[in-house]
Length: 615
Image (cartoon, rainbow, N blue to C red; front, side, top):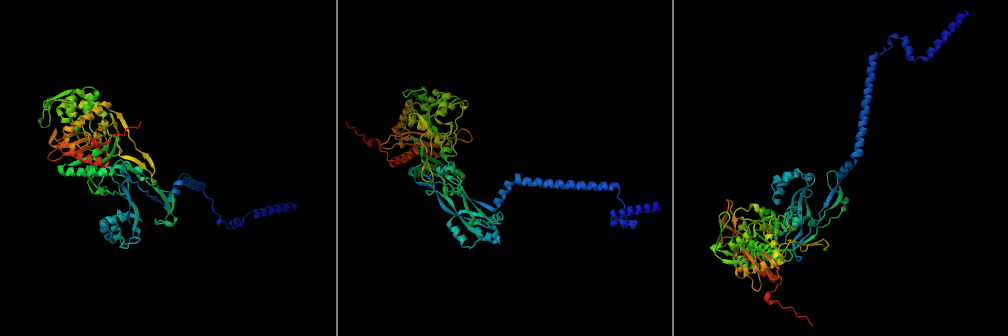
């Protein structure tokens, strides 16, 4: 009994402990066996685990990608995005500097700046763009279609016209299109003397960038440095003026003083225009240089243009012909051949050549003098005075191809002179191997080579400087916006070409050409003039030379004993009389005589002897 009771008590204690450890759910399941959930199969549990694992991997990858993108934006693109945001909030306003002036050698203005008004539209403020275009277009000389096209391209600002006349501004202002139409004041380049020295000055574009002449070659100096201001802008891009602040102040361009003299330029242009009217020449130029320094005192070209309205004429008129046009120089070339023969020692001033009026040369060609003249025995000086082709051909034959070529290159033919202007041509000097048939002989009198007027002038400085050639230049000095000289351009000797005695001898021979030779019409009373005429046939497009087209020229130095002026006159295709001595020499005389008077250079016979020294 006692054993059973003790066993029963033990069972009851175990049951109580089981009841204490069980949950109410287990109790319900025990009371309702049909509601107990069945355990899932093993493969379902594994599938759930795989799905959970994949989900965790995806979450980790997504989080890693997000973190990598955040790192990329912050570390690699942070500065760029910050700058982009700054640009969206802050606008940069360029501050245009004042372009430097161009002055003549005495400080007289040749190119200046004026205030001009430009017109812009605000497309976002225009409700009826067609009506706006119909109203504004005729005033700006634009079609309504053009106006509408410009409005399509802008949000808050679009240019309609730049630097217009005051009358246009007045008409637009009277339309009362405030908010839709606006005006800005800009600087406009102006040339107060119109056509004067147009090919030396050049011109600028709508944004004041140099496009030709000194305006182009010295654009960096003239332009200056733009400044910069910043201002905040609203969501549609409108500037908040009260937030504007200066970042960098603009630096105005420097002024340039040219070697050009306004008065001499006017004389050259006036006399060239008169000659063009007399001769009906197709083109012409007069270039004046100081042979002691290489300074260009005047450069006149016809036809010409007004740089204030350069866009209204054909681009061909912009060409600075004295340095860009290559032509066969004709008899003016003989002075360089004579100098080469003297310097090389193949002929002396007292040696003679014989002119029978014609000369048979290699290739079975015959060279003849103008009008069939027979000059007989001649010295080198007489060959220049008479402009004898037969004599020049014989001098060239004595010189030979290799020496002739060497001296032509020493005189600078076939190379740019290096003048501080754009658009210079090299000229044409073929290699001696290309001088076929009578090539050597024809080159001796200026046919078969090509030169520019500037090259010819530059080579002639040799005779005024004891055999040394100078580099030509057109800029004399540069002054900053405060008027201080920051650069001065001086005389630059390039090389010694011939011996001093040779230069003096050729210069003396050239005076004979004017005294009683082909250049008599270049004579100026009271002054010794050294010169040389030139009459060259122009090549025919069909081969050979055209007997109806000529280039007439005259090259002169005055006063010969102490050179101050070196002038070259070139008339292209004059009608009627075409000899250089008849049509170009008188132009030289008029330009030189007036310039001598202007520069107060006294005639030789009126010069006062120097005062004797006191004992």
